[in-house]
Image 1 (cartoon, rainbow, N blue to C red):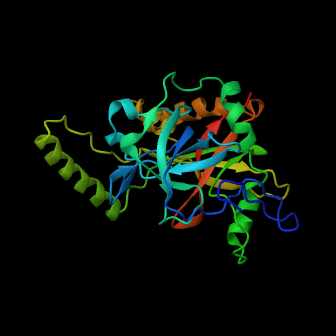
Image 2 (tube, rainbow, N blue to C red):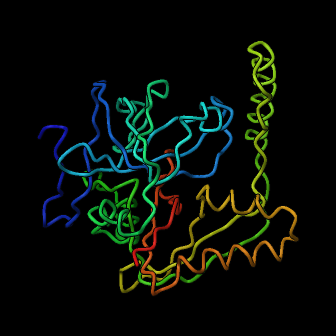
Length: 292
């Protein structure tokens, strides 16, 4: 099977349709990607801070997920700082150090943001998102991931249609660990020196999130007992920072009101979920899209 075709598990194994083999070549190609995921910035030993960016590759006959890493988004030139639901064209090669089939290394220097801005309406967005809604429930994905059968592949990124949203759980952020704090401090020192040498404005040091937010929901499996996953959308982080003048209780209330509208049952939301490279069972909710 060639690397551009979809990999379908045999029907007797599992009816998964959007699971791909890992491309092990070093072939460089330019992908047109509709960005669906921009997670909040996280400390990075190599890059100071970086962002999980992912979207749908739409320049091929079959849509597929693409994870673009690393993208130190806050360090990109202003004209390259794209919004969600924007089309970008970017040269990519398969990420050889990441076994996840959706992971690619982008050429950030040659990333181009298409004019026209982001898709603004659910109808426009769902034209691309609807074909990507997973045939697997979240319980299915975790079951395959836990399986000792290595021939059962599973997606590291997926669009999940929940059966019921149980709500957001919001607590004060417990703080970064020592390794993360060192990464941010080292990045700040290096940035100060480079900014001074290049006569550039000082970069804003990344701050810890104010809250740890988890989404609780039931997936489509009838026996699902519930999922509780970190909610890491950058929009949530930006919204929180716009309310720094409010006490915690009032800010929590604002968050619940803002996302309660999107997550309402009548809006029929879908969730963008993804796992971690070093913790394949640790899936997070990376974004939400209302379909109605």
